[in-house]
Length: 113
Image (cartoon, rainbow, N blue to C red):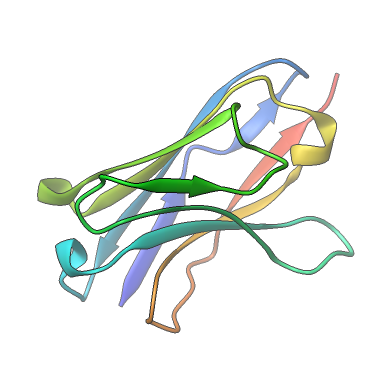
């Protein structure tokens, strides 16, 4: 299983970023996918999930209404569109297939003026 997150960077408060996670090594369309994040000195936390067919998405209270998870099964890729970013969104972001214990390196998102 390989998970390659990308799209992170430095953005000002109120800005937007779109993260991507390219996957391989498993049958992507068979698995729900999630995004997690880990801020410095804090435990990793769940951010959002999407079902296998992309029909249902769920979000942590802290990001609901600002973040949108989506997927493209033909491309084996899951996305996280982030808007109205806040300094507290600063973290390393990871994608993960549900029921598979595998993690990528993550992508750093820093929200700062």
